[in-house]
Image (cartoon, rainbow, N blue to C red; front, top):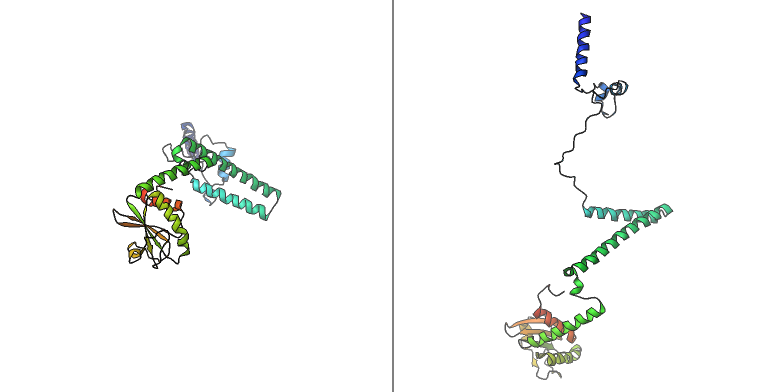
Length: 276
């Protein structure tokens, strides 16, 4: 009887070996311990001493990669840049607090890397400007001396021509006071501008006093309020549209002729946000 049992066991083992079907090596109680990654004595016996790795799974097979799986998310550029800045600050602080040769050298090297990166960015930026003129703001507002001078001259000629055309539709209300020292300085400037551009100026006295530059002045009897002005400060200029009967405040205080011209041009001939 015992002989028959032993023969049956030997036959079953032989069939498993001949069939070529690998089976996982049996684990002892130690394999079920919390540290499952540590090889157990039974694994050492089967996979090491007996060298049965051909027929047993001594190592758990790794899953094959899925070609259709989405790639892992990459770190955002803003996060990388923040990490660089953080590391630079840390190296700098360490070099200052612990100024050893190693710490200072590490900071200098890392800082140089970032300077090189910034130089590369600046170079590509400049090349992009050259190859894409629509991105170059200096074409709208030149910065070089020669180009800026030419732009200012063209701009001034354009404004003077625009003012001569605007004077046919617009007039200027000039609010002043005889006791105003700034008005004495400003009145000749406004007079010269009106003569060159053709604007009709109505001088309005806020205190009833006369004006040497504008002898045909009028005394305020409500014009100031009708212009929408809320302050009695002088001198004050208001551009008046005779077609729409709309007042357009220009400014208060002493203004140069160029400033008055610029403001009238922008308030009447340009759209908001288009001239900057």
